[in-house]
Image (cartoon, rainbow, N blue to C red; front, side, top):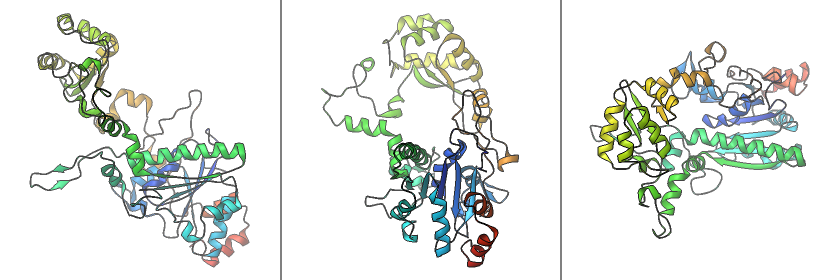
Length: 412
C-alpha cells in the first residue's frame, strides 16, 4: 500500500529519495500529488529533523513539512547487503533522487550507470547547491547562499555598523525543488513512452537566478544602445531600473497607507484608472491626468501621489479590497506572513493542513483537482519508521530475509 492509498494523479509513481536537509523538498511536491516516495536514510537519519527553527515537540518544522507523505527506510549503504536492498528498490522505481552534494551515491557504488544497469527506464535526478559543474561545484553551502549568489538579497547594516542577513523570501531552496520535480515528471513521461530513462541535475543557485530572470535579463538588455532598447511608451521611452526597483517612483501603481494598514494600487491601464476615479467621485483627477492607454504608472507625479495618499487613508484595507471588486479596479491587500493566514482569499484557497495529522499546521500544495481532491499527506516519518513495511510490502522479503538483513547491520 502506498502512502496515499492510490489517490492522486501520481498514484503508481514510485520515487527513491536519498536526501539531506532542504533539497529533499524536490519530492514533497510529488508526494502531495500521490507519488509513493521512499526516503532512504543512513542509520543515524537525516539531521534535517534538528535543523532551523521552530522545533515542534522535538522535531523541526522543516522536516515535518518537506518529509510529509513519505516513507522512511534505514539502509547502511556502506555494506554490501545495504547496497543490494537499495538496488532492489531501484528495480521497479520510476526515479531516484540524489538530494545532496553531487556524487554521493557514486561514492557508495550506486552511481547512475550502476542503477541504470538494473533499471534502464530510471530517471536519475541530482539536486544540489551549485550543481555538478563550475568552480563552485564542490563547495558546501546552505539555502541563503543561493539567494545572495543570485543577487536577490540586499545586505542590511545595523545600528553598530555590522552587516546582517535581512528578512527576505527564500528563493533557491524552494525554486530548485520545483524545477527538479518538473524535470522528474518530464523524464518519467519520456521513460514510459520510450523505455529509456535519463539523468538530470538542477542547482538551487541556478533556480534562484532563473526565477529572477527579469532583472538580470533587463540589465543585460540595457547594455545595448538606447536606439535599440528603451523604456515604455507611457514613460516617454525612458529606461526604468530593472524589475521592482523601477516601481519606486510609480503613483498609479504603488503602495498606499489605508486606515488600518496598506494596500497596493495597480491602475496602470487607463480603464482601471477611470473606474477608480469614478468610484471615489474624483473624475477631476482623471480629466487632469488621463495618462496613456496601458502601462502608465504616472511615475514621479508627486501632486497626484499626495491626492491619492489622502484618498486611501479614508478607508480600511478590507473596504478598499471590496471597492476594487465592486468598481473593477486592481487593489490588493499588503499582507505579512502572519496576517496572510487570516486573509479571506487565503482561507478559501489554502486551508492549513491540521497539526493533529502532520505535527504542525502546514500549507497544502497550491495545485488543485477541479473535479476531485488530493490525498491529505501523512506525517513526516521518524528515522526508519517504515523499514519493515517497505522490505515486506514493496520488495516482498520474507521474515527470514528481513531478520538476516537486520543481523548483518545492513539496516543499521
